[in-house]
Length: 226
Image (tube, rainbow, N blue to C red; front, side, top):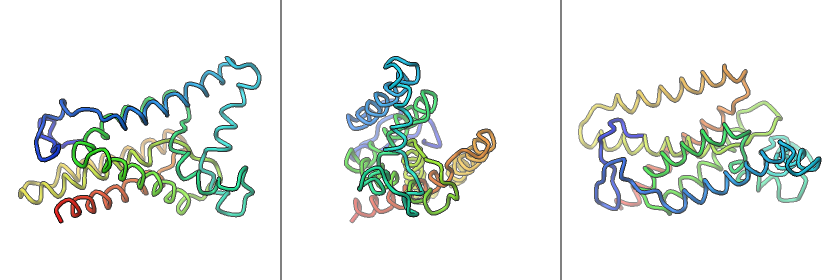
């Protein structure tokens, strides 16, 4: 998410044009896992697996979605579910359209983050913000409905990219308005989506992911410099 499409992105101390940034294996792996899961659920929805397949999505959400009620005394389907759901929710999606939007975003932003901090750094940002997104939903949401999707981690990637852009611009004594403009766009996007989806959007997850992504990005930067 560079403010200037021609702006160079750092990769191991070198600079490469944005369009030439390679896609790391870990990103293709995440896209593959999420896509395969959704394709199986989609095929089940269409009846490819008979009557049993029609229940696949419900079962997947029951066992892998993020259920706030499990942190408020609900009985889990298995003992570790209140813990594992902080990760499993991020690999499930609400349909092919939801999946496509998130995977395109993952490919776009993930390449930029990995180019800056490498695959391990990308994994740190992605993992931490996935957990933080779920935590944000648990703390701020008043609903008991399940939450699925990779958007918490994706907003975390966006937060990381903007944090680095902020630091780079201040170091170069450049205007920070482009960073603020993108942040305002993300806020506006959330408002529009929340209205369009009649409130059925986990903005709390987006907020938790974005803020943690910003913080983790600055930590990685200081770690790299120190």
